[in-house]
Image (cartoon, rainbow, N blue to C red; front, side, top):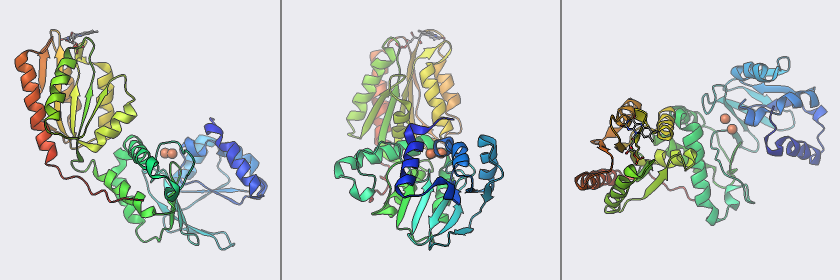
Length: 363
Ligand SMILES: Cc1cc2nc3c(=O)[nH]c(=O)nc-3n(C[C@H](O)[C@H](O)[C@H](O)COP(=O)(O)O)c2cc1C
Ligand SMILES: [Fe+2]
Ligand SMILES: [Fe+2]
């Protein structure tokens, strides 16, 4: 089993610094069984033979299925607690499907710290400070982007569960949130909760008044139309992000696509269907539930076409408001380019009318 970036060694060093021998560990709480957090348990089970693994009933099953551990687990459910007898007491709340079905959070009642697992997490690499209130202002934009990228790629499809999870935590007096990824929220934990609420709403309704353009082109014909479309959008002065497939990392594209109320897809036809890297991206949009967009499709074909048909299939059930598609043979004519410009203006004008989501999360 993989050992993530030296995490096991760091964990052992931390125990050592606290003068804790693994032999003396009584409980190991597993909020989430995904191997990026638990890959080490099969070893830990041997190093800490007296420890019991505390997790949900689904977690107990996964512990056996992934690591063969079955005699040393305790199953807990929402409302259960674990008193360590040293003034520390954990209570547990199940938050299924944020991210896997077995997921829970653990709240320590004395310090009021919520150990939240994947919930409230972020991608990104710590460059020094690990706490929100020690993060310099220059890094905050980076963290916002990494939080959204994490949310869009890992959590977005579970957004209704995120809303339920946040609701189920509302009676806890939280002083810190320690997720398993990203910043630890020691200064203003309420900020990350608000951010997650805002992100969770991005696929329940139109998101921010921005446009994300994703395009691919083999010979440059589709690219010619792209330029016309970008000219059209620029007349309306909206924030726009432009990505090329397969050159750009899909995780970054997904983040911007998730956040933007406007989405423009430009792709040629390839063997009677959509250019494969765009098809892959469209499937990601489906899988991650990137709903409620105002969408424009364009693309060049040689003889039969096929990309548009694929687009129509892949955009079913996405709750998208789709504009008149713009398919053309070979290179676009002047008239087609003009049409591209006017469709882009129309889309931008509609997107502009969408009110931005409240973003008062300064920390
Ligand atoms: C590998 C490959 C397969 C293609 N398959 C089709 C096809 O099945 N039907 C079609 O209409 N055009 C097909 N084409 C033609 C392209 O769709 C056409 O040349 C288009 O103008 C390319 O747009 P681009 O310049 O933006 O790459 C294919 C091109 C390539 C390179
Ligand atoms: Fe996870
Ligand atoms: Fe994780």
